[in-house]
Image 1 (spheres, one colour):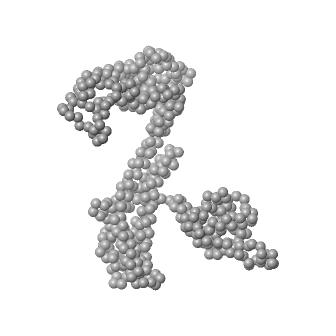
Image 2 (cartoon, rainbow, N blue to C red):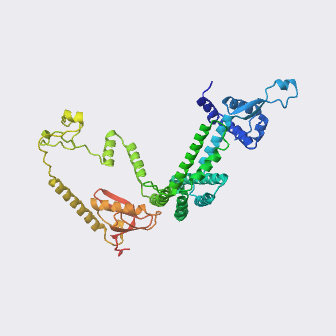
Image 3 (cartoon, one colour):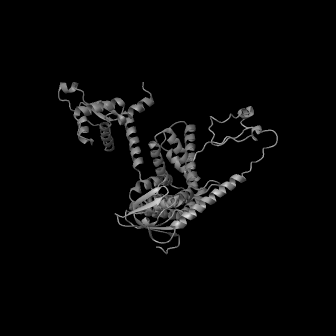
Length: 511
């Protein structure tokens, strides 16, 4: 006898079978017949009514598919004797098919799955209005001497349904904002229009949430002391049609339903009323909605940076990966690795006090060539080592600090000298710059690269600031056949001639 897991597996076999499209078309036809209150279908009716993905299959192929679905448990087959007109027809196998219980469950599950994927996530301002209406209805029922159980149960059931929809749609909406932004990044104008619509949408929901939260919270507080009889009425109405049985069992079932309604009401209250250290869910939703606006603006800013030619981290890593692929040997790859990630050989440090006064091993010494370090057994066993005696003296770094300060000062002086050469504030042709030393040429390349990055098209004039904001750059292309040659200590730099103006930020004499 097959187990429940095996039966469930057989019921879903047609979804991944070789002829899955054929099987799904047949099952969709039977599901439609079920919705139309039709009990059974014949193979020729299936052939006529089904929406086939391609050409209509033959009746023999449909009969084979129906037989397979019957073997898997999705359909039930019953002999068809209504069309028998001869003895040969009686002995010929003819069947009527209908959905089995398992087949109905599978179709219902697949329908819910499809609806969930196609659901439009949204922030429901209408739900807030419906919640307030249902709470007012419950207040009116609570004021009655003998409230109608049907009205009470309907109001509570609708309130729970609205709350479920509000929570599910809000959660799905917040999760889909980032994905929607990514889908809109193909067109700049679409992104800008989508950004404005989304911000207006979020602001409208937040304003409605703020305006109604106070009223809803006050209604919940008014109902808090009067809701218990209404919850009991709703539970009793749900248990009214229960099958007869033992009285203790029915009493326990009623108590369980009352406890379920109490839990639902507590969850509804916590949506708009803070409970001690637990923040109200409406406040959390409002905070998340507000946080979506700067996230959207950040995504638009990132898109603008990509359009302007600035590389992001992912683009940098892709370029670095191509460089690694182009290396000719492992040694070159290791050099690129150290240059790209600033990884240097690890310094050797002593683990015992007696080695603290010894000469330190240079940082460039490979591990294989360095002397061994003796590890105390206590460190291996306990994971810590407290050396006996006085702590070693702290090594002064005054000499190293002075050396670094001198190096920084020298580099600063070189940069200032290079800027003094280029930052003239006058429009100068590249062909007239003359000889540039190494520092001036590096600065020139950096400024030229920053200007070309923001250039909309070849031949367009560029006015921009340097990355540090200290220099104003203006680059005007000259004739396409013009050539500029700049001699440097590295060689001769050649390209199209431009009119270059570099001035300190705020100084526009040359512009």
